[in-house]
Length: 64
Image (tube, rainbow, N blue to C red; front, side):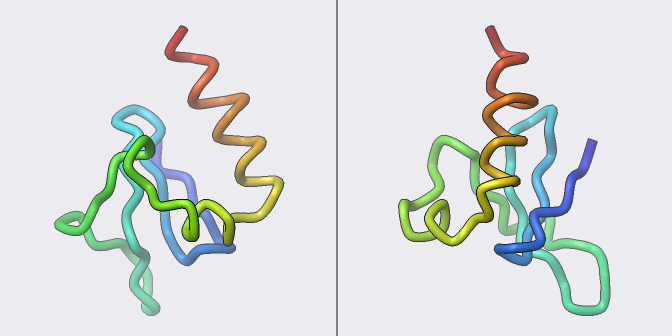
């Protein structure tokens, strides 16, 4: 499932854990994905608390 990360103008694929930049006119760049584990600290620091909680509770807890 693709979920929008509004605070960082991106989307995350909840199955592959890939984060992709969003286009301004809709859609996202499937060629520029970065795995959740490889995101830099600055990017994560710009994410909203709600989005971080979503990732931790929904995506990361499902891998256990």
